[in-house]
Image (tube, helix red, strand yellow):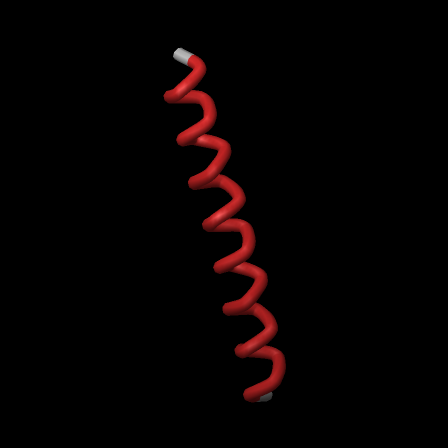
Length: 30
């Protein structure tokens, strides 16, 4: 259970950081 929880947290932070980078790129292009 702990390993699964850690994996979910890693995915959450990965998508969060990726989403922020995408937003920054979109804002720069505009």
